[in-house]
Length: 314
Image 1 (cartoon, rainbow, N blue to C red):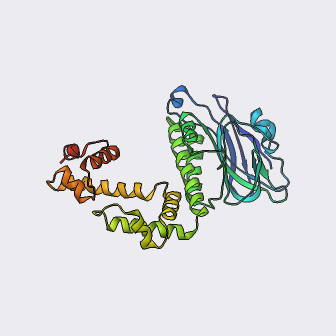
Image 2 (image 1 turned 135 degrees about the vertical axis):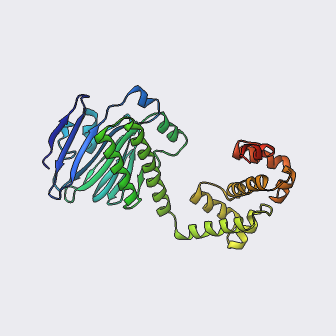
Image 3 (image 1 turned 45 degrees about the horizontal axis):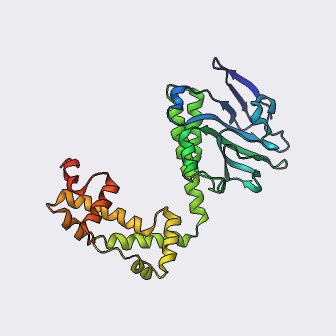
């Protein structure tokens, strides 16, 4: 692969570019960021796209990468997060004690402090897109369990939306117009959720979606009734514990939490559109205890049901 040094700008960061036979550009950026950017809690540190033909040194032009990025094929630890998306070819990704076969449609997440290595098959090669990022916001996601060492390899498949998000990131880091870091990081977040959500859906049997949709339909059809999850499970033909397990795995919410959500949303409309008391609204929504209903309402909306009409602008 014939890379050439294309740009060395005033900020002393490097852009490497190469045009292949198909007319596509491969490039990499190591990005500057300011104290103002860091206040957002997230910054984009690197982004790139490269086609690695069979038999090519990996990473291409290794010595032109910053030192701690060079040993990607033999093992390294980074002080940042990186998301890598394979769109053609195959290779391997290793993190900790595990190794995965990476193919077209695979993605993997590098976490700060996690020893890892990856590279394309010498006989096949691959095409990869990647983005690096760091900041307190991403650290919070890791602390809350959204980004963990137990889930660093994904099989979301090929996604046109994911590719478009990478294109948005690449466009921002190429042009570097005012607030480009903010715009690039918004696309990084969307990319993370696209990869994670697609991978979760593909990891679950089709029957899960049908069960969840049936449960949602039964809840919506009985908005004014009492909350009875065992009855919903019985109508679907599964146990309550199994419904809880499937529903939470698919939606990240329990059936009870979802039911509460649609009831409170319906109560919002009732309190605005009809002249009824909080007690009657609670009764219509199937709550015997209006004080419990009021606590739930305020917890979900941030406003007491007695004040809802005033704050809704009616």
